[in-house]
Image 1 (spheres, protein in one colour):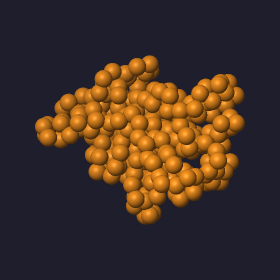
Image 2 (cartoon, rainbow, N blue to C red):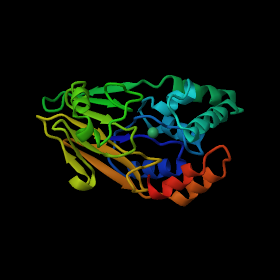
Image 3 (cartoon, protein in one colour):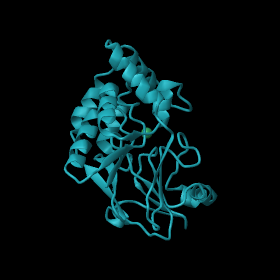
Image 4 (cartoon, helix red, strand yellow):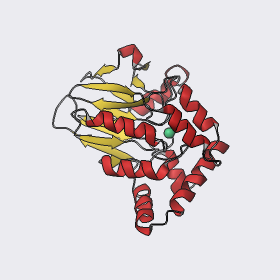
Length: 257
Ligand code: ZN
């Protein structure tokens, strides 16, 4: 089984709860779809936890922004990005500092796992979309407002594709259709004859009105969505304690939006 986590956003409290939950299951490896940092108060702690636990970590738009420059960020996100960069720059242990920069600068934008089985030959992992891996959002509304976009995206992978980026978990089919985890009772049964694109949701800043941390597990023939309650109040307090981080970035955690 493979655990897929995404969009941690420097929220150590949520990440620790998710890692503890994963440790209690029969998971062989953890794949992180990016946005380890940005928005939240503990970028270095989160990077260390992800480096120590994930076998692959892809580049998200916030990781990219810290390494290079933010593109199309609002003021709050941009300030958080510059503050995160400062946290790494001001790390006094040169070995640790180098390890952080090595980690971010070596994040691939795409990961592919090939299985020796006819029904599920290939699984693709990206942060945003298989078309534009770092920055493209695939929203549930796109199935109505932009079905051509969904179609074009589905042409870029052959079986199963895992994404994050919107912080909204669920399953896209090429009909096009979207199913939230609630609609399928948290479990998506893989149909061998049909492509599916799975958004695993966000560990550190869920936006589907459920404040609990979210991640997914790829099992033999299904994908399971998991919610993990964590100490949201503590996470909020940490955000509010950093003047450079907009208070909204803390308060939104309570509502999961
Ligand atoms: Zn994100």
